[in-house]
Image (cartoon, rainbow, N blue to C red; front, side, top):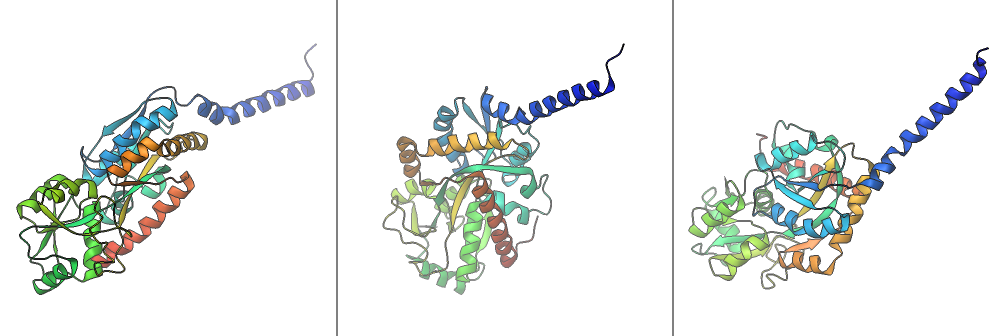
Length: 330
């Protein structure tokens, strides 16, 4: 005699419920076992730049907190878009991440077509810190402060030039904000990296640039460049005698680049939470904080939700700035 239908249905219901419970537990099980192999951190810029320095500074301390090595992997090109495209296409399991800066918020407005959707394809892990830039000029330029530089630029519209690390780079955006706030007409000369832009500023091929503090400091100390103002809201301990832009005569100017760590959208929330908790714990280590400050970085920690909100706010801000500057998307 066969088993009654009611009993079969009851057994099937129990089996389905057990299967559903097992599936619901998968993310937690994944987080409990994560990570069981090294994590790849894409650096979408060339070695030696601020994003590369920031990424390599945090990998060791973060890896110790996470329990697995974090390996920096430079995938430079197209103002960071090549590396971020790789992240967008990576498996969302927490083993592929990327570190980026303001370029992540700028590029959607600077490029007519991107191979990814910044607002949809990335989930924020957290933030690493901020860094000021500094306005430096060639020593042959007969100006000693920002007011004199602005006066010269206005008297000779389009004759002075600034070098950047490429269109959309933080060098570029810092300079565009300077042009907006000062009314100066200065020509943009993009380079394939911040290093070449600084070399040509020293040589006089361009008259000024806006590098990060750590990159400019040795050249300023050696007397090869003259620092006129730092871009943040307060003076830097690395250059305590250099005024802020506000002190130098541009009260509404404030620019700091931030560094954000992202994962592909779809990465389990508990994996993101574990990555965030270990990243923040690493940034709290006194030894790492000291190293970051020495390189001109101010540690900054955020939750994934806070980092996401910051990114979206910055995308809106830079879209407006790029439109105001009259920059046409490439």
